[in-house]
Image (cartoon, rainbow, N blue to C red):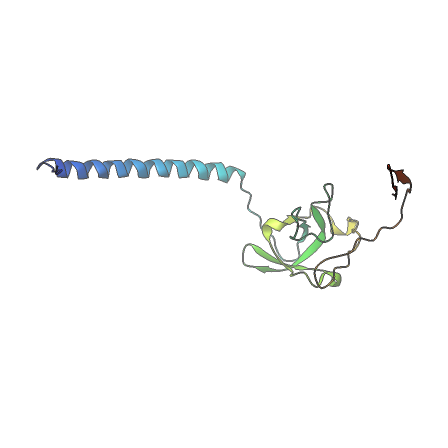
Length: 158
């Protein structure tokens, strides 16, 4: 059983497929414009100048820039740093203190938040000693309470 087209059916089929492609392109363009308008309302362009003061974002994900901050209630941004150079439109070089010399000083603008007000009024956080493996050691200052838990056959000091 062979399939054959009539003389008039071939050009008609091509014309129909061209019309369907035009409709699909129009619908794609409409969907893209809807998405763009939705994004444009929520987008804020971040632009910093040299000598601006910015906070640096601390990531909540392990293995990413943490600077010794951990835990659920830890701050999201750490102390203010001064921008010393703009690298393109989206990268900034920060002036980091000497104890953070192992951290690469170039950050994307999404990791920064502008300091509003006088940066000299901000109380600095405690410093964290970072070693060559980019890790640090938590040293407890004091043990506030101590007691012994009794199990069936054991005594556990807590």
